[in-house]
Length: 315
Image 1 (cartoon, rainbow, N blue to C red):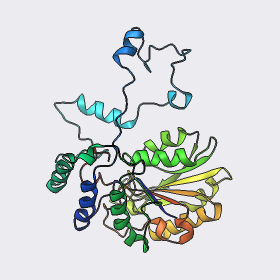
Image 2 (image 1 turned 180 degrees about the vertical axis):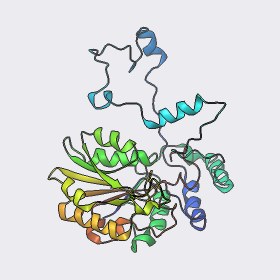
Image 3 (image 1 turned 30 degrees about the vertical axis):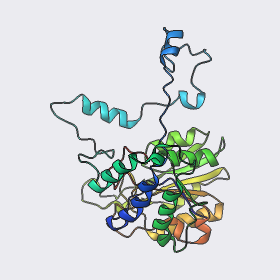
Image 4 (image 1 turned 60 degrees about the vertical axis):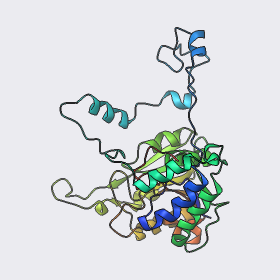
């Protein structure tokens, strides 16, 4: 059974109206705001300490849990700080989805109209608004060649990253191994380690002449002998990202079939990160569509924010 974990899916323009109509008419799915722990009352009670701050006594009961205390500054912070510190010679951050223009006008208008609806400003069901889930099922069913059940196979999360983290939290036990192809989207690592998983890296090899000649992202390759050797009895999941961030590689149908067959053979869950599934120039295959056996092991994550130029909406 395929599970479309979280939708932030980017659709061609002829699909967008059909999707967003029932989506925004039914209301924007739950957007969760983190509660600020450093409230005035807390600060007043402990004026010499910042909750989670460097000045906090490491022996205090208030110290962060071990699963988060070792987290380091991420790559985005370095790039953003460098760009902010260079006003005379601006640095263009091409590592994230920062657009220099607004989402399409029809999208903004639909959002404005939705905000005037009473039901759009109330709690949403935990799995997401039913009309949105039905719209997503309608959009994806043609790719799967069957009817996707919006009640059991579609879940809405606050952005793709929450969907990915939710998948790891649901399936990874301490000590379980998760295979990640490198290079990779950096937030995979903390998401895997949060529930106690161990990251196992399998390199993608660049073209031999890539440093001196123009090459295609498709020329990056997987050594399947290396992949097989990385699989152990503790391997629980494999992260598959196609189209790939940051390389741009769109995995071929043959590559996906070989990966899928290995997962079926070894009972490994496939987390298929397909947030760029509308941004490609070569044939794109969804791994879950290759066979019923592969589909039964696959969790598919999608994102509308990329192609709607609305990466900050986190619907």
